[in-house]
Amino acid sequence: MVVFGKGEDQVSSRVDGLFNERSAEFESILTQKCICLKLDESSEQFNNFLEFFYVASTPFIYFVAATGKLCEPIIGEAITERSVRHVLETPSPTPPATTEAPAQSVEENTAEHNSEAEEERHRLELIRQQEQEHAEKQQELDAKSEEYRIRYSRNI
Image 1 (cartoon, one colour):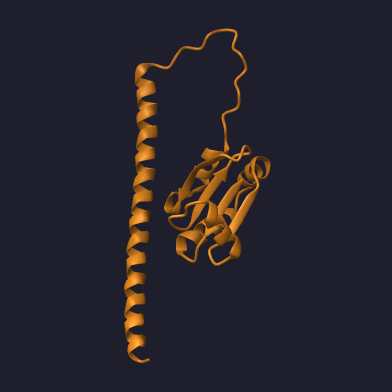
Image 2 (cartoon, helix red, strand yellow; image 1 turned 135 degrees about the vertical axis):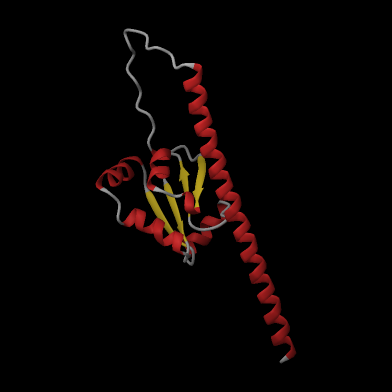
């Protein structure tokens, strides 16, 4: 299952467009591999989802395996068709070979590992930035709330 949490921000609108205006190939992957669920931030269903899963910010995409296991979510700017495909597309099993294929060289393995590690570092940095932005917005909201509370408590 793919759960898309949509907020009122521009990034959420872009991600919504990713699903609404998807290519035939992406459509095929989505319909064959999963059930898609979109939750609007202002909906009761979104609030119900929050009771069970941590949500730092919108937009987000959570992946729930058929076993019920939750996979690592994709958040904010990191959500692209490519990132969703990466999670949904599993390598097809290779038939047993009659001749042994040459093993990857140490350099190839190291380069592949470094590339994956770099992608993971970039993804984690994006998540940290989004959490920081969320914390800053929350502080602004708290300050405004306190300002209004003080202003209106004087008028009473």
